[in-house]
Image (tube, rainbow, N blue to C red; front, side, top):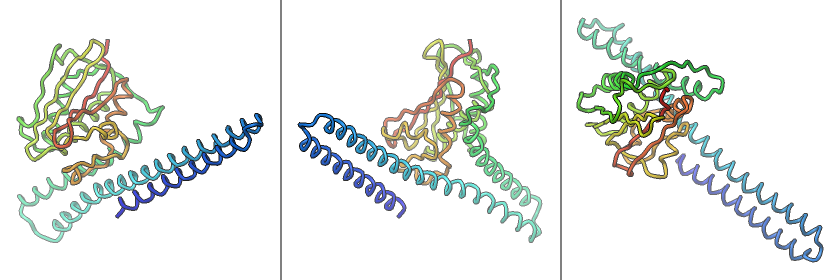
Length: 301
């Protein structure tokens, strides 16, 4: 229902804008025909109607963008609300059960473990929102130190395996060229770790039940190092490859609609890469054919 109303609103504003621009164009042509012998009124009229047409077009573009942005923000609020409410509800139910029932020690430990996992999920969602706000601040402090790429990748992969209960074969990595222990970048290790963790989490979430994720560390040139994460997931259509890095944007392909998230993960990845003088981009051969996300960073001299 919301998608239909959004499309109707966009169609209305586009139609209105085109109609107004066409009307202004007709008036402009009429003015030229009526005043073709008088040079000054002719020039002034053409300039005036040109401004009107440009204003109508820009206003229409602005309105359409605002409608889409509001829709993305609503989707983000719904997603974050769900991500916050679900673990809170789960913790509340387990606490009520512990309070009202006399449970055995083994069952109590199981309940405690589930509540700890829900708490970590809750903290992760809050941290994502806070980090998204922090990385766009122009004056946000950035501590710089030499960060070894190899240990950074290994730590992020270990966390992803533990968080998603993956077997060692489900996620592996290889390196080309210079050993990754010698590859270093200058930056904030915490932020770089968060960016890589977001990419790995996305790769797992958008992959089938038996994910096959491969991480590569390559040096395409002397000045840069690239960390590539390739999955066998739902893939991305060519038209969405750049949009996935926008704030609140979520991929709408078959198999991705059931994936929970806030739409901030890849936005944070690119923002962190940009803060470190690098970039992030995605490649895919299309829906159902997996995705490769690359984080490119300048090497420390």
